[in-house]
Amino acid sequence: MPKTNEEVEELLGEWAELQQITGRDPYRVRAYEKAARSIGGYSKDLRELDDKGILAIPNVGKNMLGRIREYLDTGTMHELEDLREMVPGGMRELLRIPGLGPKKAILVYEQLGVTNLTELAAAAEANKLRGIKGLGAKTEESLLRGIRSYTAQEERIMVDQALEAAERIIATLRETCTFDEITYAGSLRRMRETIGDIDILVAASEAEPIMESFASMARVREVKAKGGTKTTIVTRRGLQVDLRVVPYEAWGAALIYFTGSKAHNIKVREIAVKKGLKLSEYGLFHAKDGSIIAARTEEEVYEALGLPWIPPTMREDRGEVEAALAGTLPTPIEARDLRGDLHTHTNLTDGLAPVEEMLETASARGYSYYVVTDHAENLSMTGMTREAVLEQRKKLKALQKRFPKMTILHGCELNIAKDGTVDYDPEFLAGFDLLVASVHSYFRLSAEEQTQRLIAAIENPLVNVIGHPSGRMIGRRAPIDMDFGAVCAAAIRTGTALEVNSFPDRLDLRDDHVRWAVEAGVTLSVDTDSHAPKHMDNIRFGIATAQRGWATKADVLNTRTLKQLQEFVARKRKRT
DNA sequence: GCCGTTTTCGGCCCGACTGTTTTCAGTCG
Image (cartoon, rainbow, N blue to C red):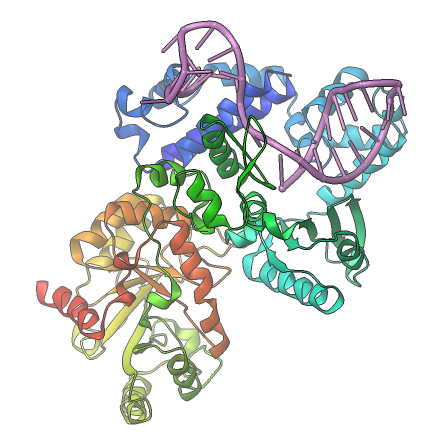
């Protein structure tokens, strides 16, 4: 999403937190949170909207408009600045401690003068918290645990690791208990790029035996909470896992509730309220007499509310409910729509498997084409030579006979140099069927330089796909700074695709950039960048990222037929 | 602070679990 929108989202979010700490009306706090999220998810740039356009953003009223205008004009919001002065700097961090909300934060501040994490830890260790009315020894202990887990940096894990952990836990429960249904839900089902905790949902008539098995799994380090239908544990690796057991009859309603997002649920429940209904994890009911309307499947519950089924990857309250109501919710792309992979490697360069194995795996997936794109000579660590390139081309030709249903294409992943040029001369490049070009160095240039560099690569008539366009590595390397709107415009102008790289630590473009690109009209390419056969399974993460950005089959280059793909390449080459 | 096929004022999602409470507030998702 546009940078200004992200900045305003951040500031209003901070404002909401500061108001929580000062004890403001919770509904006012929520209004700030809602406005922040709406603006952050809005695809039109605030700088390009007039007052009427800004007021058209959901949850943005006259007051918010004034603040946004002030920010656009002056770069600050003076009321927020004032609030910052009033609240000690460390207070916001206190809210990050599990079990500590605004009420307790105010309490420890007023009673003990605690203004930051260090002071809170000292007060708890000196047993001073238990002296406060409303807090006891147990609260003190649980807050100490909360501080420890927070400072131990038990941070979010990548989606593939979360998926693996969830599948292992589900397998364990399958072996040890009986039930009707089981699945993971929460942010993992929505396929966010990182996952804070895992949610497991089970449908069964009896909750107790399942929760018992769950709490006594070998990998459990701590049982944080255990009630009648819900158990929370922390694994030895520090991962929090919630288990919720519901009746089989309520499976659909529970799945909606447990999948979230929280903001999506609130929006859907508000629709229920307006219709005189009540939605909870137990079902959709008439508010008056409590009689049940729907609960068994997600589809039934959504339908009874006048909504189509909304894919979990789109449930972020980023406009999907409004679109669903208006009948304009797009049908997102699915893995089965893909006809091939446009970005893959072999052990000729930095891949791990011989080309034969890669082709076998791709063929077994039912792909009708597959592009081998090993690195080029400028990425010197791979030691690639022109001779090796031509050798590989010959080899692929020979291998084609073994794959009658899948066309093997010879491509290359070019390196985008600091100035936007790529490997080889045009004559040599023209020998490839399709070319990917990616940034592998100079990640810290200015936004202007990066934008010019990417546009130069995009304008190269032989470059068809920009690989992992932002260059980020989740948790390790920040994305390059660039004017994404300008990059999109160049991609559209030249007939160049932007990649959605499926590697779990890349997911690049990321979801909100996908959404932006799709709205602009950019053609995308969802690829695995596989360096080994097993990496081809990562396509699920790339597809999920594309879905989270509302990309449809029509937006994605590698859903097209071989002929259409070849035309895409030929059109750009002919243009200049 | 936002919002309106019951409203321009009076609402604002819903339930589980914990802890310190003898009936409920705070936190979480």
